[in-house]
Length: 257
Image (cartoon, rainbow, N blue to C red; front, side, top):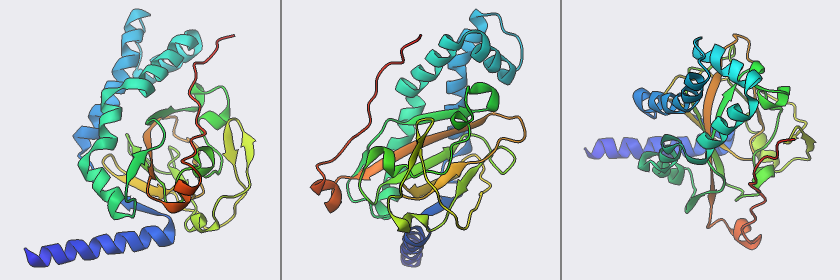
């Protein structure tokens, strides 16, 4: 038992060191696959209620693309209701296992600094490319959270180069906040360096610094890329305290024209 505890402590220290150096860590099989599949299933059920209303009879992908094209306001409302209150989406970021891991990486007083987000990306579910393939950016810019704040990226499907897995730029977080240009609502940055695109399976997660430069890859296999994103700030980080806990996010309803 004592040897196991020593090994666990060494593993945690190694993870923390790797995270500090690379700006990210990949944790394999962190969540049970059934747990993650249920989250995705419940999100799909929101759309399926409307598919039934409109008598759509195709595959899920065919139906959601049809809903996007024929009933766009309903499509948007489905997405909004998922983001604002899908129980499974809000349960995951509060799991003790995840919170403990974030604390082990140095977040002393974790607090969610934005709402959970669930993405279902496909070229035919977006009116602009930036909405399914985000450009290179740093999440920190949009929320000005603690300098040690982190993002937890959870794939709800197996992801790889073919369906646009994350594009990660290791060690880019060491550059600090970079100059940016607003592109389709994203603060895109210019950055050149090593790039990796990890293959991830359902149950795997990526935790990365909000200062890490990253992007989403091209969807080449015509599938929908499902993922969840959670952001945590550290309420005890000195710089964040000195800046008065800035929170630039503004949530307001869409106005249909």
